[in-house]
Image (tube, rainbow over all chains, first blue to last red; front, side):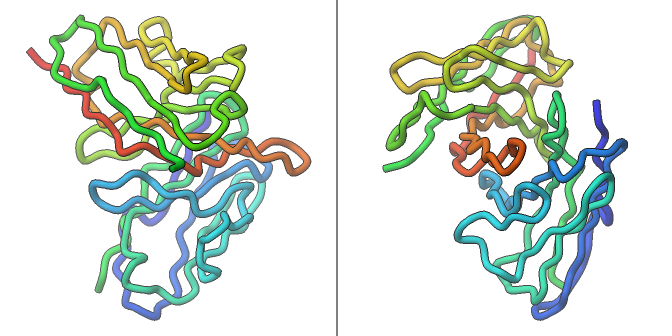
Length: 107
Length: 123
C-alpha cells in the first residue's frame, strides 16, 4: 500500500498566519490526492480533490498544489474556524490511504 | 434533505459480528460510489472499503479482507457486514458519498458524510 506522510504532525499558528501542510507519497500518485478537514467529534469535510481543485463552498484561502510524490495544502490567512486536523488521502490506487493527520492549533 | 445516517454500532466481543447500515436520502443513491472510513479513538482516518453504484465493484483495505463485506441495496442503503471482529476494529465508522469526479481521469471526492457509528470490540 502507498504510504502517505504528512508534516508537520502538529502546528501552532495565529489568526491571520499563512500555513502550509505537506503530504508526501511513498510512490508517484500523479495528482490523485485529496485534502480533508476534521474538527473534534465531527465527520471530515472535503476541501480539495485532484490535488488542487477546491470543492464547492470551500473558502478560497485554502489551496492545494503538487504532483507526483509531494503535495501541499496552504491556508493563506488563518481564520478561527480553521483550527482543526487536516488529512491527505491518495486515490491513485487501492487501498486508499490517508496521511496520519496534521493538527493545527491556536498559538 | 441530502444526508447519510449510519446505524448498527455497539459493543461486541472479539470474534463476534456486527452489521453497520448507512441510509441515504435526498440523492440518487445508485449513481454514486460509496465508501466506509473508520477512526479509532484518538487516531487518524483509515479508508476501509468502497463499492460502485451498481454494486459491481468493491475494494477493501487488507486488514479487513475476508472479514468485512460491503453491500448495498435498491432501497438507498449501504451495509458493512463485519465478522471475526478484533480489538483493533474498535473505531467510529463513517459512510461517505464519493462524487468520483471525472477530469481526465477519475478523482475520489467524499463530499457527504454520515455522523458516524461507534463500534467497540471488547470482552
